[in-house]
Length: 344
Length: 279
Image 1 (cartoon, rainbow over the protein chains, first blue to last red):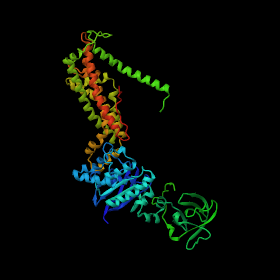
Image 2: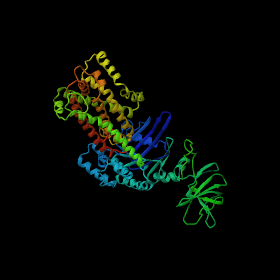
Image 3: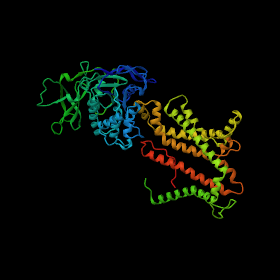
């Protein structure tokens, strides 16, 4: 497939701080590509360099094979959905959406048609004459999306566009965004620090850390075969243990608590002691300190409404996993940095 | 916030006293302008409207009023252009000495008028060797008018997210188009407020004006000051003052309307409307 965006050796420094450190990246045409990482990992700076708001200190940005590194934002065929939406407060919804079209001198009839299409796409028909201040957060978000997409850019950049919405609305917008992207077929580059969002929406994900890309692959690949401990820890919950000089990671849902009546055939089993139990609705998280060293967290499905599906704290248990689910990983990161403490 | 009945009453009294202090003297001016007496004195001796036609017919007063309007308009226009540009430079670009510039721009408003007057007088007449005219008054007024516009514009720009301008550029607009279609419309009420203050300040300025105005030329404050204590026609001067009050209410009313409209549409940024008491 054709490459829409190619970053080569892209670097941005602020004084002594290297925000983006010589990254190489290719985004294919029509892809929903997510840049995922903790704050300060360089994902937003990279996005700004693609949009043209920041100039790279080294390296190039290519759009559709053309080097645009030196071009101003207004000379690039990309549009951005901003984190704070950046709707023009003195213009109506319609005027906001039409703004880009009036700049490029699209004829009036065509403009009206595309504006109507865009409003329909984001389901805001009948809101065209309102001012942004009269809209809810979710509606503003949609106007921002319509204002960008109506220009039919080569690439649409989205900078944590759902960050300000509450959870329900965010989940709904995730589905809508993905759907809209399928309809218009524009390449989306999406920045987020939310791993669930990234896994839900993306064709491919690049995990950023300290200005570098740790891994770029499909959500499944990223989750099942994390390249290193940082990726394993940032995307999902990681159970990193060391056995025979090798670092392994096993996802919590792949770990079973072996009891009487549950066959342990083909499983690698270890003994340990339960140290923590947390009921979280769909699953119960059970933390087990292994006798061979290290600890793992198992996610036990609450298929029965028994009182203590994972046992009791202090209980001696046997845990098991299939050998192929213990994924061999490299050191912590390419830079050997402790992943950020994250809530589970 | 809720008030006890006692606090409410006291607040009402305070507001009443404040308004009385502002408006009773204005009322006295009105009474004087209706006083047929040839000498200044209290209480008025009768009632006449004849000072008003006389005031309107008076060439000196008319010319002075026209001069004042000219000076205030041109000085405000200069201040709007320079003040806006300075505010943009200081709040949208990083350059060496930026903080010093934003401080230095503010100084003229704090300087005593007499100092500004002497300094400009010396500069115009001795250093530059040019004749004092209305234009020297305009330049002198512009020095402090710029401050008011700059202050209002800079405060607005500080609150205005730069992502608006980024979004405009992102949608294909050149910097000039962005300035015209996004930056200026969002600064409008701040510029109205700043411009109005600048106009008002210039309109009644007398100290700096005295040092920079050409011989024989008069602005309205200069004319009133000169004519007021001459014997014979005090009522005419007061009639001129009443007309000036009425005229000055027009821009205040317009500004009030404009900023109120905008405050319902501007998001986030509280609109710096000029403090206008509603009588």
